[in-house]
Image 1 (cartoon, helix red, strand yellow):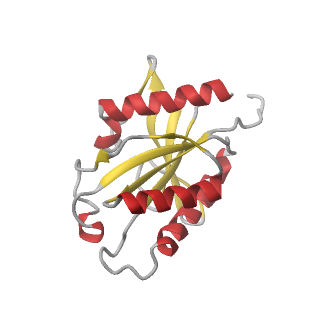
Image 2 (cartoon, helix red, strand yellow):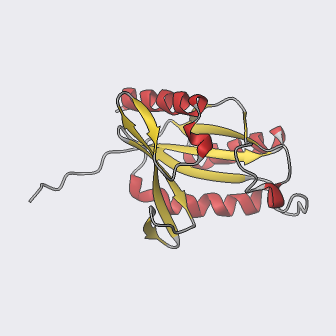
Image 3 (cartoon, rainbow, N blue to C red):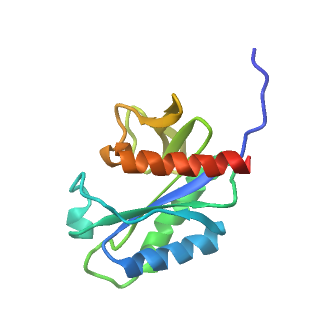
Length: 175
């Protein structure tokens, strides 16, 4: 039998998808109020590997990733996803077009993986609580992050892999 070891703090990240720089800015400020200082913000990345969100979010979508300086307990992921879902609805109350002005995808990075929270069940997702699932999206092996069979294509681009490796480096220095 293995020994139970206390959890290690993890690096909170969030991906924001929207079509407006103003919405990115407003969302980042709200996330900073909720989760503390931001220590990494990516460049804008075209969100064009899928049209999944176009019907509710419109055309010309971009994504930006960020990480937060304060490390967290990984058991908080479900509550963080519920909080970001509420934030999506409250930040842009009254906007009718598009029907969903922003999408916030929280997750975390550890020494070995990148985990995302989801409201959707699938064979590779593990139920956490309150309707929230966790998905190991990237694994760290051979000195870099790598995708899995189910990893979203945009997470596997060279640009995103380098960025997540950079965030992991920040995390490793913090530990």
